[in-house]
Structures are given as C-alpha cells and as structure tokens.
Image (cartoon, chains in turn brown, purple, orange, blue):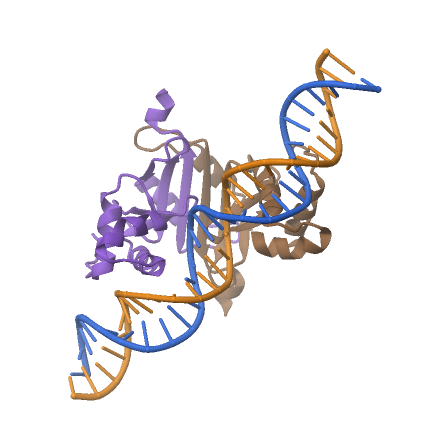
Length: 132
Length: 132
DNA sequence: TACATAGTGTTATATTATAACAACTAAAAA
DNA sequence: TTTTTAGTTGTTATAATATAACACTATGTA
C-alpha cells in the first residue's frame, strides 16, 4: 500500500482528476480542467504533479509527456515502472508483472552495475485496436 | 548492420555532431552548434532528428529530451532500446544485452499481448560517480 | 521529359516546463 | 503561547521543447 501522504488542496484536486481519467492527462489539459477550482497557473499544476510523482501516486509517461495515476499498490511504484501504450488509441496501462519487475530489478549491465530505478514503455496495439 | 540510408546534407551534419558527442545532445543545443553550417531554424533540426530516429541512426532519451547516436549495430535498434542513465553526471549508455533484449522482446502481458517496440531507461550512478 | 516523393527554408506559433519572489499555513519545538 | 521551520501557495515572467503551414528545390524513376 502507499504510505499515506496527506495531500494538500491543490495536490488533491489534481490527483482526483488524474485518478478519474481513463487515459493519461497532459499538464495543460489538467490546467484547463482545474481552472474553475482556482488553480490558475501552470506552475501550480507542475508543482502538484512533481510532488505526486515523487510520492508515487502518479507516474509520468515520458514518451507522451502525460501523467497517469498509479494503480499498482504492491510495488516500489516510483522506482520501477512499466507501461504498455497503444500506438493507435493511446491507451496506456500500467503493467504489473512480478516476473518482469524481478527481472529488471536484478538486471546488471556488463560491468556488473545495478540500477536503482527504471522506466519501461512498451508500444504496440491494444486488444481493441488489434481487432479493427 | 544498419541499412545504408543516404543521408541528406542536413541529416549528415546533425548526425555527425551527435555521433561525435560523448553525451546526448538536446535539439536546441544542436541548433546552436550547426548554425554556422547554415541550419538556422528549429524545424530543420527536428526534421533531421525525426528522420534519424526513424531509420535508427540515433535514439531519443525520452526522460531527458535528448538524442544519442546508436552504437548498437546488431539489434533492431529503433524498436528495442535500453539505456542506463547516471543521475549525477547524466552520462547515458546504450545497453546491449542479448538476455535483456530477448526477455523484453518476448514479454507478454497478462492478457497474452506482445508488443512491437519498447524503450527502457535505467537510472542510477555510473562507476565514476559511485566512487565519489 | 514528367511525375512522384522527400527534403528545404522560412515565419509564426503551440506546447511543455521552470525561475524568482513574496506571502501563507501547518506542525512541532521552545 | 510564540517562534521557527519546512513546505506550499499565488503570481508574473520567461525558458525550453516542438509543430503548423506554405512555397520552393532536389532526386529518383517511369
């Protein structure tokens, strides 16, 4: 489970929005969506996003500059992330595979070097788009 | 080996610059470096970068918005990339591990879905920075 | 030659993200 | 209770990254 962090007002507004969204949200689309709640400036959004990423409540999809809520309650979420991304509909799913995360957490390069963190993005077609 | 692509003048100028650089280069730093060679606008740089990525001569490091030359002549370079990134000195190295690429190329999610492409970025400390 | 395809040069603009600074708030130490 | 501290907030401005649109040019090939 996530360690409980008491989110501040802005953090909560932004987390709730991302958490309810079926797909990743971009920072400025978040901004437009929360302006009626009093969050007026990009920096307010980015600050909340930074914090939410830091504590593992959301992840950034680097190849898309977008943010998705973490739905993976059992792993070291902020340090070991894997996603599948559909190149047609842009659906993004967090992968939780014990095998994969074990393999990557233990991966050593040819110098025997281990890493403390990774991010993996798979690209392909989701089921729906495969059938089309 | 890479299929031989006849690079155009701009593509060649930009590839040579990236290829000579020990670390990944960002688009606008590339721009500043090639202005004396007649490449004046961001779009000229981005177009060349897009093409070079497409044909696998360079890769984009997504978490850094930077570009590095491919030094991995034996794999499906544009479709299966893995890098290690030092969080202190920002040194980036392309990982070529047969085991890793085989594992990831064959990875199926829990719906049995396979993916056609992936990008993996490991973060940690490089040897030099570990010793400090 | 003529046609198609890809690349070029250019201006303008969109999108993503951070700097700097003053003010506020909550929690805990004194 | 007051004070301190660390963190967050609100704000304006600006930096950094990336694309749209359009007219033109080069190159390969039929």
